[in-house]
Length: 248
Ligand SMILES: Cc1cc2nc3c(=O)[nH]c(=O)nc-3n(C[C@H](O)[C@H](O)[C@H](O)COP(=O)(O)OP(=O)(O)OC[C@H]3O[C@@H](n4cnc5c(N)ncnc54)[C@H](O)[C@@H]3O)c2cc1C
Image (tube, rainbow, N blue to C red; front, side, top):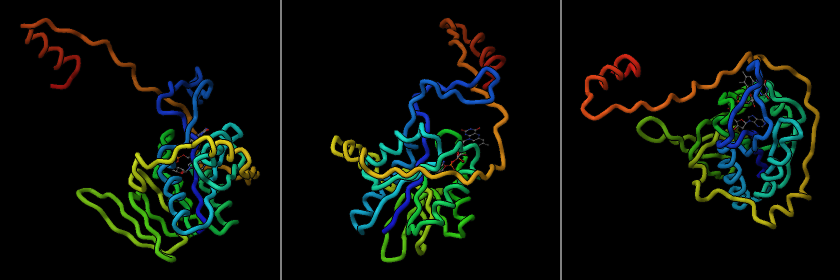
């Protein structure tokens, strides 16, 4: 079974997010980058499927050379080979187009993405790939089994679960539940050593352009200082809740 896992290189969730002084770009200086958490579930699932059915797990990222440590980590976790499409991922459509090109040039049975990336939260790339390649697409998968050329999936829906089936090849958007957090594979020393010699191919991006561009960014307002109200000052408390906090 030939599986592709698309890996988004995102800032660590604990990173302090800063923008340039004109608020038009995100400052990456000093920011630690990680595998998008939704993609980590997909990667572990792909490795488990390979253990069951044989085959190969390829990971791909569309990004600059700074995303290579993230791809090497995916190799250390257990992917067989990696592809980096060299370029700046400036919009979801561009990312989907570049990934689709790699997918169309290879015979993948299963294309696993995360349901969204935790940086720009577009939640757009998986569906765009399915549309560009005319493939079936199931999003927000919380379970996946493969039987022959058929995939059986589980999705969480309001108030219950949905069970879906589709033929392969197939694009899925995955999340927690594909595997549990406690089952996530982490690199061990042997994995880290072998990752150094696993193939990481760099391919040129096809220089297509995106369809949207970021104009500016704004951070949430800083948290205001906590105001203490003396015991017995209920009237003042009610006034503050009404006029300042505007919650009553
Ligand atoms: C309007 C807009 C403007 C942007 N402008 C800039 C910019 O100026 N500069 C800049 O650096 N970035 C920019 N980005 C972010 C960058 O384009 C995103 O990486 C890209 O849009 C995909 O993000 P998404 O949130 O739509 O992905 P989602 O659809 O939320 O991601 C879902 C899944 O798709 C896969 N995926 C997503 N991105 C990649 C990738 N690069 N490689 C491999 N797999 C991937 C992963 O499996 C991920 O879990 C912009 C994004 C948007 C939406």
